[in-house]
Structures are given as structure tokens and as C-alpha cells.
Amino acid sequence: MKETSSKKTVYVMGHRNPDTDSVVSAAAYAALKHALGETEYVAARAGKITPQTEYIMNRFGVSVPTYIPDLIPKTAYYMSGELETVNELTSLWSAVSKMEECRTKVLVVTAEDGTYKALLHYNSFAQNVLRVMNPEKKTAVLTSMSLVQTTLNAQPIVMVNEKELSKSSILVAAAQFESFKKMLDSHISENLIVIAGDRTDVQEYCIESGVRALVITAGFMLSRELRAKAEAKGVSVLVSPYDTSSTAMLIVYSTPVSAMADKAVQPVRAMDTLHRIRPALSASPSRCLPVVDENDKAIGIIAENDLLNEANIELVLVDHNERTQAVEGIENYVIREIIDHHRLGNIATRQPITFINKPVGATCTLMVGLYRENHVSIPREIASILLCGILADTLSLQSATTTDTDREAAEYLSNITNLEIETLGQEVLTAASRLSGRSASEVIHQDMKEYTEGKNTYTVSQIEVGRSDEILARKEEFLTELEIERRSHKALFSALMVTDITRLTSLLLVTTSKNKERILDFPKLEDDVYILADIVSRKKQLIPLLSEQVEKVG
Image (cartoon, rainbow, N blue to C red; front, side, top):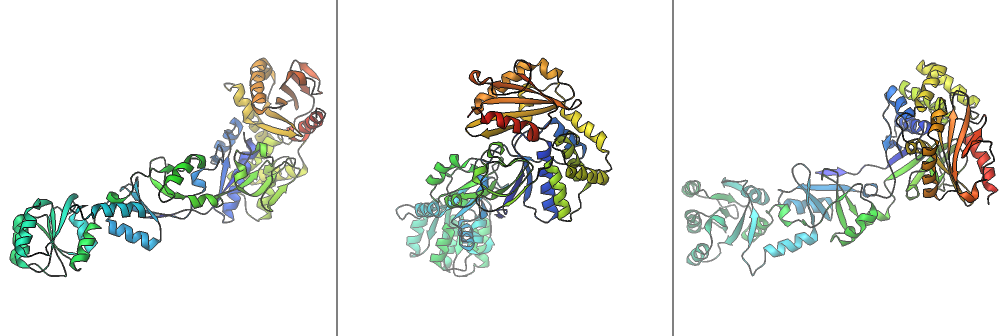
């Protein structure tokens, strides 16, 4: 069996703690690439989706992008080449022949259902064959009559219990008849495979002694009388086309490959980190390890040389271009494209890439433009979620970030979907404002972004609500979680922007270190709560103000 490793997978991913614009952009761009014939693109997300996003994807029947919590280098990302497998009951001769034919240094031995059993490599093969053929010991081979027959390409004359595996000694009838009789009598005949030529006396004595099998070499046939005796005594008889020495060697190679493979080599899993597998990889005799899935089915091989190559995944970033907002481990991979509508961040790439960054209200707006530029019609379900993404990120086209481009894109999508903008916008924003049953930690992390100004770092989360009363009633709970976040990020402060979607204004809950309490210059509603009059956009309105105030800290 052969499995070929797939070509590179390109994950289209939004930022950590993805919002609706991020998730929808990823899904829509992957769909566009598929329409253009580039099927290696896969929509992905780096965190849990928000209730708003879940509502939108469920409503319009679009699959939620694949969840990838991190991109720390893992085994699956570096596997290359073809996986060559062989059934555990295949003869060693067939297995070694396959290794030569495929020019591979290892062969994965599996059960009938694909479960990993052992690894055949030349070290294990050589050691086990030498053990079997030790001249100081009697040669005993684990085999079955069907394996002997197929390995020798022999003509079966009489076959008894042909599938039964058992150990058998091999005796070559090369001596004078009397000497041969003594040699045969010293063995347990039912465990004996005798290799003989055309000598009728030897053939008859073997059959009468009840040996397990008689293998006649050089194509010589058995008489009818002796065939009848063999059937009566339950002795298997095969005619080998080879000479005696070749026949003897091939019978040794008829043993199941599982008996000669290395069972000590333990497999690794696709999602094991490279850090975890490196010691086992270095200790492996062949400097490679089998890779299995969660059901222990063999899916690939990882070799030390693979770790010197580029990973078999690449990235397209949507709705962000700052390293602190990207999925963990991004620095290990090639970034093909960035499509965003935020300020320029600090991500460096290894080579020139496509970078699209425009001052619009939503990345979904840019996706609409890309479909139109590529002359690809937008499927109705994709058009529906794109419209929702624009409305979510622009507060139903009421945010200060909203541009004429956003409005034109929304109208275009509304015509495709026959969805009314104002009604849909209200439904989308209502879905985002549900707080009942949600913990403060969940709310803070659903749309949290980290920013860096000089030597200082800070985080700002955002939640849209119909009324801010519930947030204020749970103020201490939210402040406690913000302080935990501030300390974990070693941040100057951590804040939660609470945007009232009915009044189009916001409040800001903030925790900061005691000696930095006067960082923010906004009107206070109460302790640790600031009034952001007429501010609804984190990106365009709040962050520029915060950047100015943080710069003064130095």
C-alpha cells in the first residue's frame, strides 16, 4: 500500500480571539481560492468563535473554519515523501523486494486494518536474518505453506493447513540415504521442511515420516503413488523451480515480515511537537519514525532530513498584520499573503508577498473586491456571511470606520442575497450583545487584541451590547479578569471597551499598575470606568488616542 503526502496546505487565518470579520474573511477567501482552482487553501481560526459568529455561520449554513490553537512546529507539518506500507503477513522476500523497487530505506508494517505494527529497516532485517541463519544453531523459520509457495513461486502438489503459521526447521537432503535417515530421525518430523531433489527413496521416507513439507527442487515432479501417500499422511508437497541452495535461501525469506521487522521502534503522532520527537528520531536506527493518527493507523514517515526542509504548510493572514495578534508559532512558516484593514504592524516576511491593506471598515469589504476583481461570482451563502461581516465590523454601517466602499459592498451583497441591510444589521448586533450565562473571561477573550507602543504593551477587548447596565453590575468580575490578563501579558494596562450599539457610544473598563493610574486621559464615570463619548471604533478612534497617551509614558 502506498500513501502519498499531500502538497502544501495554505491556512487562511485571522487573529487570535477571532471576531466575525476575521472568521468570515477566512472562510470567504478560501472559497474564492477554491473557485480559482487552488484547492490547497483551507479556512482556519486561531480561537473560539463568538456567539455572533456562530449565529451567522449556522444561519447561512457555512462551515466554521478549522480550529488550529497554535502553529508550534509539529510532526504533521514536516512529513514528506511517500508512505510505503506492507501487511504484517507478507513474506520478508516480498517486503525486501518492495523496498528495492521503491528505493526506500524503511517499510511500515501494518495489520489488515492499517494499524502500525513494526518498522522494517535494513538493520533489523540483517540482524534477524543472521540470527535465523546462525550456523551454530538449527535453522528454524516461522512460516506457512502459502508463504513458502508464493516466495518460491512453487507449484503446489499437496497443500495442508496452508495458512497456518508455525516454526519449522529446514533440512537439506544432500547426504547418502542412510545418513539422511539418521539426520531426519533426529528432528521432530512434523516441524520439519525437507528440501530434496529427484531421489524417490528420500521423497518416500520423508512422506512416511510425516514431515511438515517436502520441497522438491529444480522442477522435478512427484510420482502419483507418492502423491497419494502424501495426501494420506497430511504432508504438504511443493515443486520449486530453483536449485537447492536458492530454494533453501528463499524459504528463510518466506517468514512473515512482522517476524523480521523492528517492533521496538515506537510511532509518533501527527500532532506531536518536533521538540518532543527529536530524541526518539535521533535514537532511531534508520533516523526516521512512523507517524500514526489517533487510531494508531499509519499515515506517514518523519525523517531527520525532513526537519531541514520548509514546513508543508504556509499561511495567508486576514484581518491582522501584527505578530502579537497572530496565532502562536507563526514565525516558523512562510506567509504568502496578508489582507487587512488595520494599521501596519511588525510582521516581517522572508520574501516579497501580496500585501493588501486599505482603510475600510471591514476585511470582508476587501473580500468582496477580490471576488469582483477575479471575475468570480459570489455564492449566495458566502455573500450572506460577507454582508454580516461588514455589518458586524462597522456596527451596521454606523461606525466611524465606515467608508463609501463599505456601503457600496454592502448594497452589492444585499442585492445578491435579497437581505435587508438594516434588519440584518440589527439581528447581527443583537447576536453579539448576549451576555447571559457568559463568564467575564469568555467575554474579554472573545475579541481581545494586544498592542505595542515602544517598550509598552497593552490589551484592549471589545464587546457590543444593547445596554451597558449588566457590564457595570458585574464590574468587579470584569476588572478581576482584566487584571489577570494584564499580569499575564506584563502589560501597562488591560481594558474592555463596552460599545452601546443603540446609543453609539462606549465605556472603557481598565486595570493598570498603581503607579501608572494616570495614564489615560478620559472622563471618568466611576473608579476604573471611563466614558468614551461618541467612540465606537476600537481601530480608528480608540487605539490612536491610546497610542498618543501611552507614548507619553516612555
